Length: 531
Ligand code: NAP
Image (tube, rainbow, N blue to C red):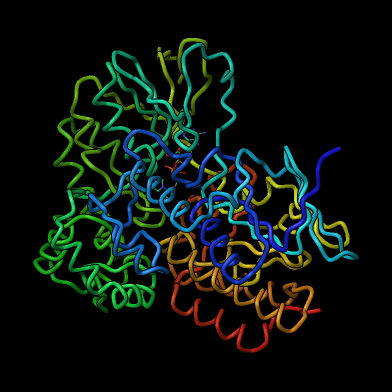
């Protein structure tokens, strides 16, 4: 019989959300454990070890703010930290705050059932069963990989890799013919690095993406010290930004459609040369006004044309869709990589991949031979990991049934019929449109305060009301509908997964959201039923 462990709180996941949940809940006196399917901490940064993996948020911002000693002590080495450095940081945090012993590794949740009578969750895993009053799902927004059902996939005789499940050992592509499917953020980072090693690299592109140069570089120690000397002020300024991310370019109210050619060119050049997402803050109307959006898109297309030598390849790499509507990419020499003779671009926009064969890939009757295949095909974002846990709430209602029409949460934190279950950066919260670590801190602190208040008031259960969730989903979509975001096939909408209901999942705008969460708590958790 499976052993049963009892906890006040069970956390699922030991990425940044899970680690911080463990820390604050232990400090608040709860008996808490995390289960983690990996063999180590780090979540996203544990799994995504593909060549070139790097954070698109600057390292001095993509880090915890809760402990000043930690943020003063930790030395980042580059403007954007690479995956190995971020993983080391997660490991350091786990060790520094004695969290590692609170984590059961190699433990995968197989199902979770709420017992309304006992007012507790039973969480079954591949090893132990846990009973816990509360469950915190810190399962990440981009953690359930998407591997399309390519016919013949299992026949391929070479090595296969998914960017989101990269092996821990170094993969050596030297001398190999490598095929990569996908041109999203992961591929845009991996392609230049794999190309530097492989004998031949063939990129299968269904939709081109806009990418802005990252201009990554070693961090200047004086810049790092300057930020550290004002960390508190800078962190709180970041929390007041829509994305929770500061840029050297302050927000402005200027409209791209009204800028003269000279003004427009000068401003865009300045931001292009600086690199990073500050590019998209050049004008306030980029994601709301189609004409302004097209002006910026055309500016980027001009750069693609000037970077890529072969005009036909440049044309294929040039997107025609709305810019910034899909999650934008940052790169290091992505477009330039296609100037190398051993790098080939295959357009599969009209003719999908027919089959994976024992020796390679077949497209439109043409055979491509490979030693290795890389799937950079993304994730079942925001809902995949939650639905993968087979969760059943009150009245036998499964999460899959509750979300048949798309994810339905209150504040991205809680789901009606699933009492005492919290989601960290869940659908309906700003999450992926912000600096994730900042969003995680806000969510986890809210959950901690809620659990402490419940303990103090002797409240056993908390459950989002159906009406509150309905109006929240309406609110999230009403805000998205004021923008161009819903106009393209992005994973924000679930459009990358065949059959997934299209709902815009993240909420735009961090500050108003955080304020709303505070108001809800101050108004005795309005929108929730407390029992
Ligand atoms: P993604 O953006 O979803 O890109 C997946 C790619 O695979 C797309 O080019 C897609 O084409 C292609 N694809 C999917 N199914 C396909 C099929 N059946 N046939 C052919 N092509 C197919 O995934 P990702 O690149 O892993 O990035 C996901 C998110 O992770 C990013 O948007 C970002 O938020 C995060 N991320 C962040 C960083 C960072 O901070 N540096 C790095 C990597 C990833 P279509 O566009 O046509 O669907």
